[in-house]
Image 1 (cartoon, rainbow, N blue to C red):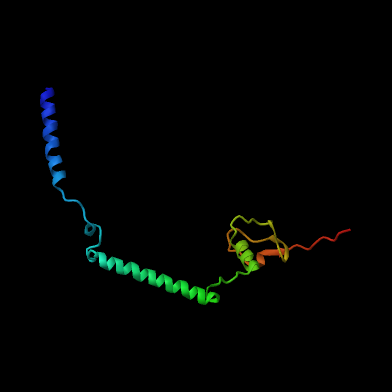
Image 2: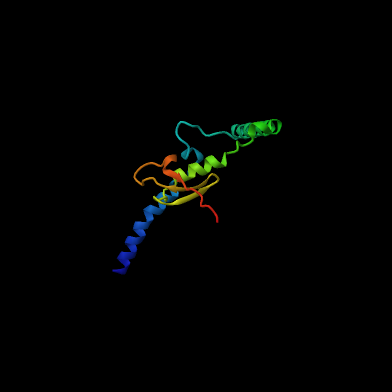
Length: 127
């Protein structure tokens, strides 16, 4: 019984190992889409040189005209206002503080936020 099981195992493993040994190794063309032929070594080098040339041109352009590449500064007041209008955690009665003063949020959670939802708090007089 043991010999029969070993024989079946050897027979079962035999054809699989032969098939695996006869399969050719995958090539680069197996991984490329069918419409694109395999790139030659010279074409590949040309592409690399072209990319380097373009990178040098962009670098030179940035050095010669830095004013074109300066980031546009954002208005901090506008950014803060937009952040408040997008804040989903605000609830009616919450107080927020800005450069323009303190405000009470009077909006509703089921409606989009508007500037009018923030009512200014009158400052207390100090005695």
